[in-house]
Image 1 (cartoon, rainbow, N blue to C red):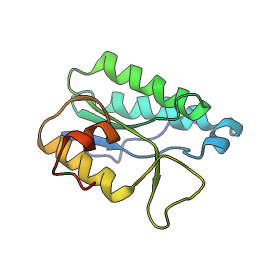
Image 2 (tube, rainbow, N blue to C red):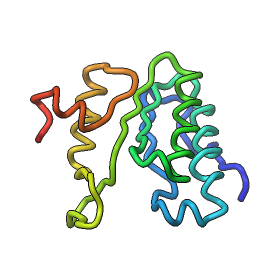
Image 3 (cartoon, rainbow, N blue to C red):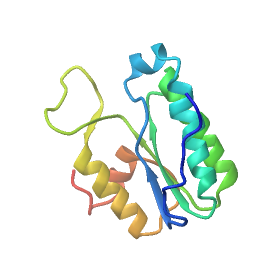
Image 4 (cartoon, rainbow, N blue to C red):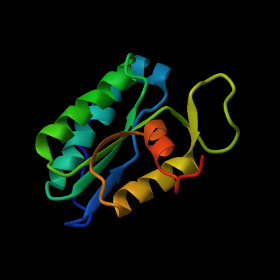
Length: 140
C-alpha cells in the first residue's frame, strides 16, 4: 500500500473534516494495513493542507488498536495546529440502533454537533456527550 495521491484535491480548503478509515475495531486490530490507512495517510492529508482547520473524529474506545491509532493522529493535530477540533465519539450508527454496543450516538447528532462547533468557532477537544449536555441547541 503506497502513499495516497492528493494531486486531484483542491489546493486550499478552510476546514477539513476527515471521516475515513478502517473503523471496525476487530478489523482494525487484524488488518496490517490499518496503521497506513488510519494514521499515516490521515497525517499525510493533514500535511497536504497545513493552513486548514482540521476537524477530526476521535473515539472513546481508547484501549483498542483503533483507539490507539486515533490517539496518534490526535497528538499530531495538537502538536501542529493552533486551531483544531477533535470530537470524541462512541459507536456511531445511521439506521438501526445497535443493541450490543453502548454508548452509541446517531450520525445526525454527530453532524449537528460538528456544525454547531464549527459555526461557533469552537476549537480544541470535545466529547460529544459532555458537549451535548451543556448545549441546548443540540438534540438530546
